[in-house]
Length: 124
Image 1 (cartoon, rainbow, N blue to C red):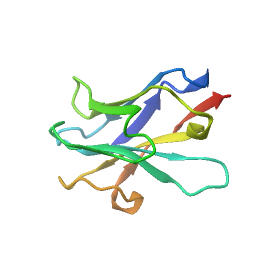
Image 2: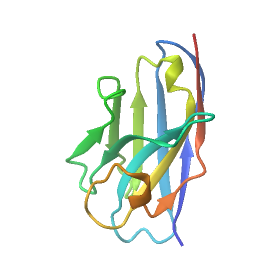
Image 3: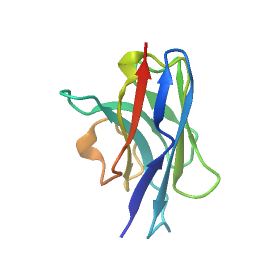
C-alpha cells in the first residue's frame, strides 16, 4: 500500500519562500503523476501544480504560475514545490497527490492517492 507524506510547511511572512516535499512509500515500483493541491478553511480543495511522471511537463494554477515551481526529486516518486513570494492568500493545508495513469490532470477526483497535508501560513 502506497502512502504519501508531506513535509516543509510552516509560518512565514508575506514575500518569504518555502519548499514543500512529498515522498511516496510502499509500492513505488511504478512512476506516478504527482501534484499539489491546497485547501483553505471554508474553501474547496484547489489545484496548485502537477508534474508528469518523467518530470518534463508541468501545469500550474494561474494564481501561482509565476511564483511556484514543481519538480521531481532524485528519489523515485518524490516531488517538491518551491514557493516564492508567498502571499497571505496562499495560506492553506497543502496536500500531495498521485495518480497511476500517465496523463496529467488538474482535478482532484482524478487522483488515486493523497497525503495528510502540511500547513502553510503566510502572515501579512
